[in-house]
Image (cartoon, rainbow, N blue to C red; front, side):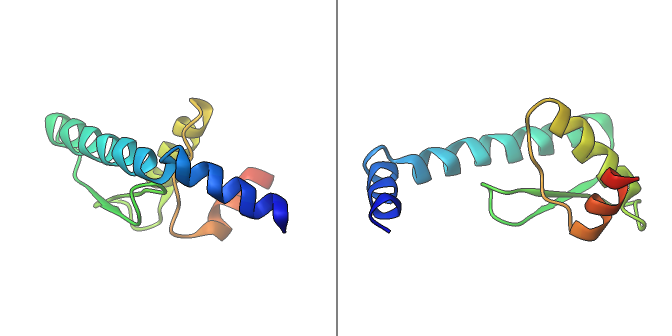
Length: 92
């Protein structure tokens, strides 16, 4: 428990939550600009630190899943609305 409290203290002192919010907002803005530029409508939900990107014409979440996989290959983790879908697809 002491290690957890020490870690939380260090994170607060380094202003990590504020930094994550700042870069999360930058990511969200960049995704919005790119989606408009390319004519691909998206919706973004969730906290900026753990964004969820949904495609308007993707009822079965396949585009969203593929987008998340490509992002993950680049070191960016994006949240999917159906976590089970991610687990099932990654196993198969």
